[in-house]
Amino acid sequence: MRWVAVLAVASAVALCGSHVLNTDGQGELWAVLVAGSATWMNYRHQADVCHAYQILHQHGVPDDHIIVMMEDDIANSRENPTPGVVINRPDGPNVYEGVPKDYTGMDVTPENFLKVLSGDAAGLQGVGSGKVLKSGPNDRVFVNLVDHGAPGIFGFPRSFLHARNFSDAILAMHRNKQFKEMVIYLEACESGSMFQNLLPNDIDVYALSAANATQPSYACYMDEHLHTFLGDVFSIKWMEDTDREDITKESLEKQFHLVEKEVNVSQVMQWGNKTMAQEMASNFLGSKESELSDFGPFPPFNDPCLKTSIDSTNVSVAIIQGRMDAAQNETEASYWAQQMVQLQQNRTWVTETMYRVALSVTGSEDAATGMMSDRRHAVTRWLCYEESVEAFHRHCFNLGENPYALRVLQPAMNLCEHGYTGAEFASAAREVCTHASVSGIV
Ligand SMILES: *[C@@H]1O[C@H](CO)[C@@H](O)[C@H](O)[C@H]1NC(C)=O
Ligand SMILES: *[C@@H]1O[C@H](CO)[C@@H](O)[C@H](O)[C@H]1NC(C)=O
Ligand SMILES: *[C@@H]1O[C@H](CO)[C@@H](O)[C@H](O)[C@H]1NC(C)=O
Ligand SMILES: *[C@@H]1O[C@H](CO)[C@@H](O)[C@H](O)[C@H]1NC(C)=O
Ligand SMILES: *[C@@H]1O[C@H](CO)[C@@H](O)[C@H](O)[C@H]1NC(C)=O
Ligand SMILES: *[C@@H]1O[C@H](CO)[C@@H](O)[C@H](O)[C@H]1NC(C)=O
Ligand SMILES: *[C@@H]1O[C@H](CO)[C@@H](O)[C@H](O)[C@H]1NC(C)=O
Image 1: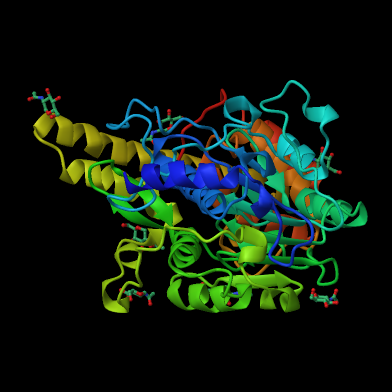
Image 2: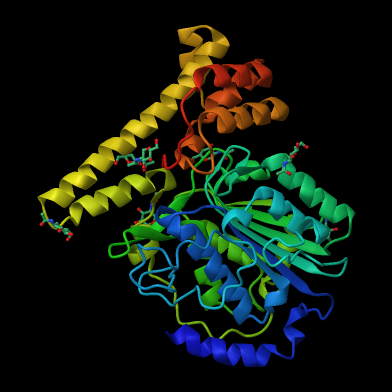
């Protein structure tokens, strides 16, 4: 519990509030941290965001300048053997300690997130803590988002955020002079698609994505006692680097190159104004010296995160497999074996449903099969894709509650790129999906 002791000291020091200031002595630092998932299986997303909070806190950013959105169903989950404790690496410190609960549970929505960004205090009156960004033209803003994703989509526990809504919000923040500069770190599958062709390089925003626009992001630190993954590779890498470096002397660019090199499973990418990366990381993470620096670099041949890293699509499979391997007796083993079969059946059902929608739209088995397997397209017909994805979410599988459904959206994109319309997709989805609403397809 080393962290607890350090926290007590840190909060005493932070009282003077001077560390709200950036290192250049002008303007204040604000941060928005969002974990977009729920349930024990997705433990890692909230653990990452809690760790990000500790970093800001350690570096002197006061709570009234940090806005945290997370389901908050992990620390006191029935499955947590140590209530109130959330860790972000095996045997790591409790990163849950002191995390502000600004927006939790049903308040974790893309609508509320966008209101936080735009500083819409009236729109959030009576919701959660009601905290919103109150930053101005001299201030710097740091945004960290962690969750499941898909092309043009960042997940939320019961819904999702469209890439264009996000970029529209960023553009509006710039127009409304809500920041001098903003840095965004985004961890999700296909996270590059949230910025590609959407984030201009002349609005003083610099962003990193965990992966490019077409590849998954990776989870790591499978914990055999907690039966879940504790972190995501990109998040772990930038945060453990931050924990061991003096960030008043480490530029964002240096951090990017280190992280890019260490994250050897996906392609970490930079977006927006890359010249901004010459600034020190402390400009966006806080300039007070942190006492947390005993991580030490891991030797590359024995990196405990990379050694356990897996494609996040395979996380649920690996967790059930781990439960099967750890089973104490025949009854327990066969229960988890059944769960594995059910998980695969669930996935097949989702994929087949998308196929049936594609078949209904195209009217041809060959064309539908082609739409299912084509991996060449990126989104260019945004309106059609957004309409199609909304329809699949509404009529077939809630994308927040059934994260596996995010894995089968490529055919919807392909149909749009081949000139079918969003209205055609929506009408097919209505016709094909007559089942009662479900959740928990992972
Ligand atoms: C996203 O943008 C569309 C089109 O402007 C709008 O209808 C929708 O309400 C927005 N969604 C959110 C979450 O703001
Ligand atoms: C990018 O950021 C740098 C450093 O803040 C700034 O000098 C430059 O004008 C920016 N470039 C553009 C195109 O906005
Ligand atoms: C994204 O990464 C994949 C490898 O995972 C690669 O095949 C693809 O070319 C990359 N795309 C871009 C645009 O770099
Ligand atoms: C990534 O690095 C780890 C640790 O060095 C290594 O075990 C693993 O094979 C590497 N993976 C890839 C895809 O290169
Ligand atoms: C996911 O797991 C399956 C089965 O264990 C394996 O065949 C597949 O290669 C894995 N996929 C990735 C991308 O790791
Ligand atoms: C099997 O193991 C589980 C977990 O240890 C235990 O709860 C259960 O009672 C055991 N069942 C039998 C039939 O021994
Ligand atoms: C399969 O899907 C159902 C919803 O249809 C869900 O309740 C169940 O938990 C899922 N099973 C597994 C093992 O993922």
